[in-house]
Image 1 (cartoon, one colour):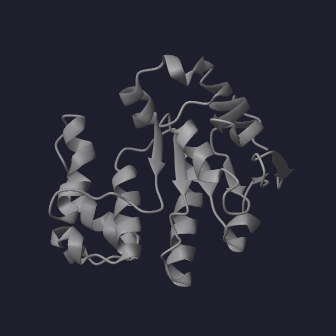
Image 2: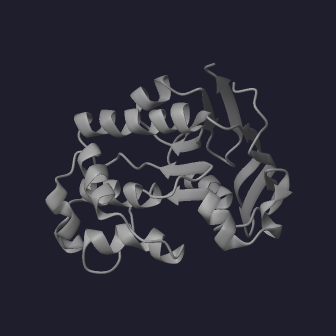
Image 3: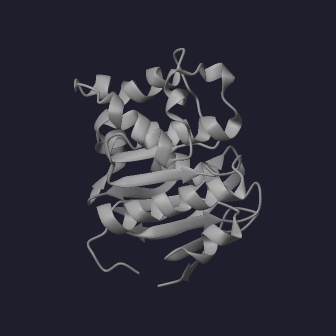
Length: 223
């Protein structure tokens, strides 16, 4: 476990829809540079938990703190630039890959660096020509990687990943895994990753296992 000051504290969080309990008594911290995985059977609330941390859903019990402040009190725009959420089935927009990679630059009023785009594509196993490719011509695995590259144009403090290698072959899974571990190790980014992949689980600092029937949790320290 990383002993640095925690960035994120999920404090006794629960989530219900009507009388249906999706999650209950989820409590964990995430520190800078820490690589923590969330796993468990389908329907146990893994994606729901990640959406709450991303401030897309509000917990019905408990609180989520970012740098000591309740995220419900923070500006969503500012928070989401610091806590970046990458989903399993990405939503790409515009016409081309370039339209997606330029977006984080536009919302920050910064001048884009196209040469960086091609370098990022290459690093994630995509050809430089992908930059001008129509988003409708991309495979599921290509869309996942483009979405991840878009989220990494400006490095967040916390990176939330929901099954983002599910459409990749083993070689590209291994490459993405190495890149994300590198960001955690070298850039001190905290990573919270939902996965079923046993290789990703093996290399985690900690594993949060959610169980069915209300998403109660068990945390296993790998550090």
